[in-house]
Image (tube, rainbow over all chains, first blue to last red; front, top):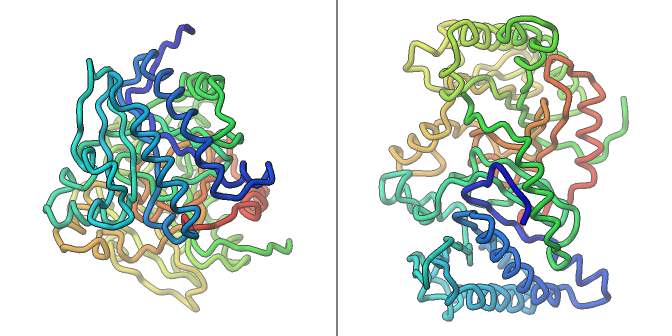
Length: 213
Length: 213
């Protein structure tokens, strides 16, 4: 164990680059997603062991659903497998997204927009599945409060880590991300290694969190 | 003039590092802001000449108002001077922020939450002044539509450029920024140079804008 002084309470994870990883290996684009399941499990364990209280994974979005069916099936299955792999551990699981759509996987309905606690609940693990940032905010509008968006049970984010080199949020939780520090790794998500987490932590130590003050 | 293939339609500017710049020169923290006015004028001219259609400057926020009065006075004055310097040119000026507060400068009331057109209106120049991302969204909730937030007249942002090394949005237009590519320069805003803009443009050419598709 490294000694890390300042641990972010809540980390957002954008596990990008699965398709580019597959192309580099001469595979079909959609075949990369299955290789992104194991990295998520390893990262969750690592975060829990360092005292991170909450992590939110960007699964797939309404925008992503424009992609071909084969890719959709692959990223949906990867989300199901990822959630099942971390449920039943000491974690509280929440899946946020539009469950009233055939594109929301039935297997994840038990966690859809309500948190399910397992074991000693050391860490909150959230997944955005069939998520739509616009709908997220529109639920808040319907409920007449910014505190009652679709993602209301997801806390403010301190640090966002994105794999795959792109420097943008791509619709990731606009309200929770307003003050988040943003760290980008060039390697693709299926090539995740523990050092990525430590690189993010090392950089986070240098961030002076002011919240505008 | 360089030949730039892909010009972002709308650029967000986070002109950070004014106080750190001042400290490095043995000046009072708040004295840096006055040196940030001229860079804004130069950058506006540069953007207009390259065909950028809209630019939004992060002036100051409700969060920033927690700072000492001397600093508040300085950044408020810098905003007033910046707006006055680009108004009366061929530009359409809009100031978005909470005008129903003594911290909103009277000098900018003519532009408060309504756009004023000058000359041939080559470019839309927006300033966020006494801006509050929460209030921005709450106005949308009050008006029952995500299309009627306080910043409703500001378009979707393609590229955000932040000076001063920090990698976060700090509450900058959460709705418009959802898909924006995010470029960070380490130099402080008062040290702005034209090359900064070209570095951002060069990087932007490499960004593959997918909007999640």
